[in-house]
Length: 240
Image (cartoon, rainbow, N blue to C red):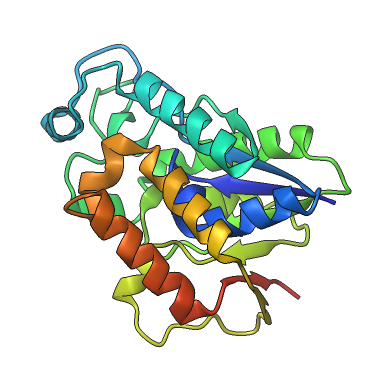
């Protein structure tokens, strides 16, 4: 069985599903992580917001190259293959005509997609349609937290009109108590203590992003363990 997980960013699948991918790898199943927004920044000036994120990550314009290297290490720890698409992260995207940055602030990341980006949804749909094969199980983010890159990924996947499995994005799900998608049955996949440890290790490989959610790696490990225990494993939902 072959599973393909769509990851809006270079850490989303590792954060949300790492233990499940390790379970699948040890069971002899094939898992691939396809990261949608893994491209380098386009030429031209970056927004002050993007520059501030680079400063927090301890990087410059080479940030995405460093993050791709982190992802390769993370995928190796999970026993998963990786594929990096060339679409830039939303913090880098801008109008080719005016130079306007589409998402110049923290608040804009969780607002509506910029109207000019509907063509990007169609472009991604075309790429996915040309690349996917019929026998795969395609797993898509639900878009919890409403991040625009998660909106982009889900919109393109759903436009394929094919069976989809969905995952809840961690740690965004922490901010939505008692949440449950409607009209989609859940499947709970138990995971072992070894899988949880590997999950934590895979997240730790994304070292530049730890400060986005936690004070340090020990705090990350504690919270992922608590989340896995609360969910009694990892949950996927399937459209019907």
